[in-house]
Image 1 (cartoon, helix red, strand yellow):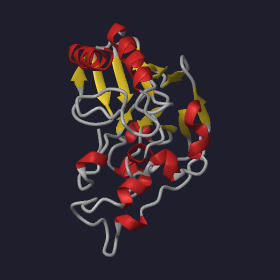
Image 2: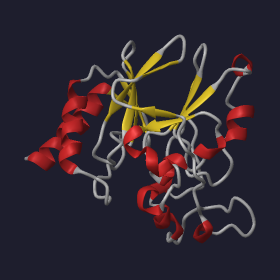
Image 3: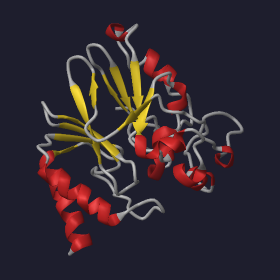
Length: 229
């Protein structure tokens, strides 16, 4: 797990590097305040990864998950939101919210940096992901789950063999956001009901610490109870 430690808590997302036998997978790419690709290439990939392809997967198009996506040569993301990756418009990424934050970062990435200048580079997708698609790393595989609610196209990546779920912002141990312009609470409730039934062992989310399956189900049940009461 990687993160951007000097980005404000609200926008600081988890970035997950998953090594596979034949393919490595990067789940989400943070805000893009500083280049991410060099960190992946020099710090977080061992000798076994040299020459191996890397697939960068965006769980959804919000700013804190796609900021460095353009740095990677092979990109995947949800088909439902695919058009937005072409231009990264503010109405889909919400980049304008970060520009307006008074304390966007606790340390400047370089002299003269201003949050008011923040922009996300377009990152057209090479692979459009739908419900049920499989990302095969060679020694493990992840099934794509469409988990709408936080955003229309939100996806999770589920290893059905060992119960590992990379959930993006669909569910995690922090504050769940369901009041963005593109959020849908009824859809979110349906996603939560689905997650309750999944044999998940551990959840690696887009924010906060990882949680086990029991905690995930509790969070999902609480959400449904609050919103469908």
